[in-house]
Image 1: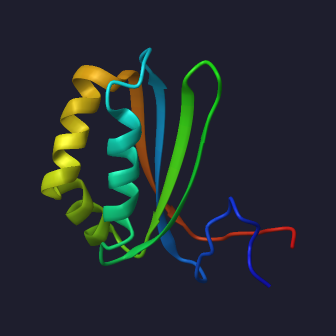
Image 2 (image 1 turned 90 degrees about the vertical axis):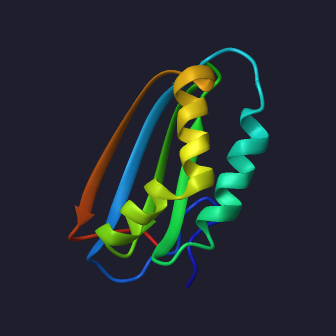
Length: 111
């Protein structure tokens, strides 16, 4: 049975999660286009497993991307276009953000 639409379909553990919590600035300022491009690029990366993302009306959001291993996460962080998005985010799109990386040892679900 596959997961509902908003849930990433993931392999058996272990795998890694990058948890990106952010508070957006006002206005789009090119954010939506870059966000779409980052999703397009991420799915092409070796070790990428999926993502889940939400944002409320006040601009607070959480995106969790899932990766096979730490090397895949490091490669994505260093990807040239992703670097541009990170730098632009720091200066234009985010009031505040925090990134956390965790190893997922167990996962449970209601199916």
